[in-house]
Structure formats: structure tokens, C-alpha cells
Length: 126
Image (cartoon, rainbow, N blue to C red; front, side, top):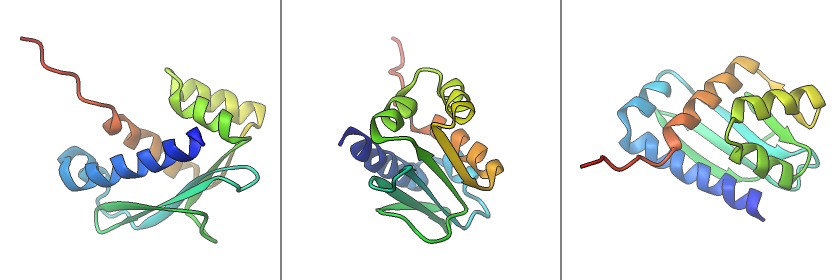
């Protein structure tokens, strides 16, 4: 359940950033694709549509995503996406085959770059 909620929240945050954050919008220029995050068994899945410099997300899978990241199970997916060092967690998961990437690996790197814009802003110190 936590993984499903996390994927929904990521979709909501990316949709908001695609409307309000100019730096995030720059990452979407000339991008027209669909990608998805899911469990290996496909029971928990969410796809994200990038079109016209906007992102929207829907539950479920699509037949031909540009790339898909599949985690061994929902608990592992949640842990990986919440890890302090996400890059290291992803690399270890790929090596251990607990994370499978289908499609264009360059787009996976692009997606990982997008996630830095989803962190909450730190309050300015007085």
C-alpha cells in the first residue's frame, strides 16, 4: 500500500512541478513519452505521460512504455525510492536483479534527474 501511495504522490508532485517549476519544465522540452514504475509481477503499477511539457499519471501499465522500472516487490520499491542514496540503491538493485529496467536506459537517467526537483524546499534561514 505504501508503494502505491508513493507512486501516486510522485505523479502528483511531478504534475505540479510541470505546471509551476521552470527548471523542471526545462527538463520536459521536446519530450513526448510514457514511462512506468511497477512491481515485477505487475500488481502495483503506475504510468506517467510526458506530453506538451506536462506530466500526468494514471494507475496501471501501458503496452509500450519508453522505459519501465520494475522492482521485485512493493516493499522493496518503496525502500529504494525512499533511500537516502537513491543512485546507490538503484545500482545495487540492478546488479542484484531486484530491479529490472526495460526500454531506454538513457531515459531512466533522465527520470532520476527529474526526481531532484521533487524534494521539499528548505525554509530560508532568517
